[in-house]
Length: 150
Image (spheres, rainbow, N blue to C red):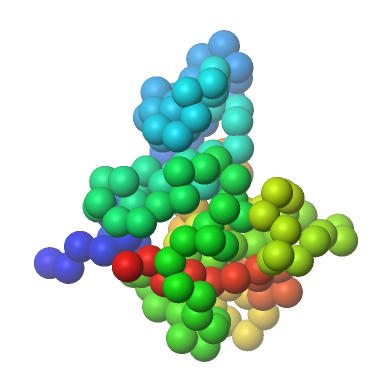
């Protein structure tokens, strides 16, 4: 059995927020607090925390940040044509409005493990997608970068 980032991340599919600031999912809270002790609940954006947690479990490079765009500084940049399930992370803009480019780290974003692509979309296995861990499609136009994690 091959163990890689994607394989480990898949085991968390279905993990969900509890739906309120009073009660938090303890696993998501632990993911968030791995790099941000100030976090009080699972209502904090946790896509980067999920990626950091999986990388921590496997002992590989990680961003140590809750900022999705912090992943633009980790690993090696690769083109979408070379993206592989198992070792690659995709960083996206957040939302559909005008956003700064990949040179701006301190801006909203989203991050997840590469799970495939079709003509229009890239598929990500990520946390905080509809408040849970799942695979979801995103327009390729939102891609800021793809990073291969060693």
